[in-house]
Structures are given as structure tokens and as C-alpha cells.
Length: 176
Image (cartoon, rainbow, N blue to C red):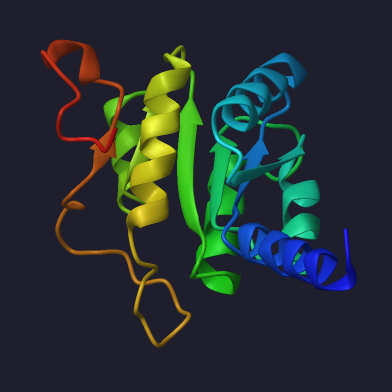
């Protein structure tokens, strides 16, 4: 390879890397974050997956680099997923957040969806999570100019809850 070929290859690699989307998976269950990470990176080279086992580690990652989507469990030791969600919405409003929980109740879903439209109940099919991540990646960040959180008066609209997807006959409304 001559110098021009090397420069072109390096430039192309830079373009490819600049288009990568970063996904931060936050859960205290190592097997789950490993499984999600492997599935996402195996099927899409444009996704960079970062893992953290608690809310504090996730905030450390966010302080060091931009992240496009955070996927977080609710129940974790230390800073839980709802506290993490509040911190992200306040300090990193450009980051989309998907909350997953094994302890879904109507009250829990209402609390989560008043802050983020992305909610997922465990157990779930990994392909559902993957589709939800792609929906979040395509959704523009909040255009709010202020950083104070004001709870909405009305329930959230356009809520992407995958806890009830099995009753739909297809996932046609989600991107493929």
C-alpha cells in the first residue's frame, strides 16, 4: 500500500467510527449485560456497546464521553435506574434512556413513562430491545432549553412500551 492508500483507509475508518452509535447497558446482572452486548455487537458493527454494573459507573462513563442511548435496569445497588434516569435527563439531555424492569406495575410504568417513552419489562426477547434501541436512536433528543425537570400534567404520549407487545400480531410499527 502506498501512502495515499493508507491515508484513504485511515480517513474511511474515521468516517465509519464517527457514524458509530454508542449504547450504554447498565445492570447489576453480568449475564444479562454480556448477552445484550454480544447480541448488539454481533449483529451491527455500527453500534459500540459499553457496559456498567451500577448507576455510579454509568455516570462515570457519561462524564467521560457522549452516549447515544442508555439501557438501564431499575433495581440496582447504590444509585438505582430511576435516580440514574433523573441524572441523565438533567445533565445529558441529548441521551435517550430505555428503562427495563422485572418489577413492572402500572404505577412503576407511569413513573418511568412520565420521564422517558422507552419502557421494557423483563423477561423480554432481545430482538424487542434491539428494535427499541433503534427507535431511540432515530428519535431526536429533547429540544428543551432548560435543564429543570417539570413532570408533565398529562401522561406521556408516544410511549414505546414493549411489555405489552405480545398482544400485537406484528412489530410492523417498529423499524426493521
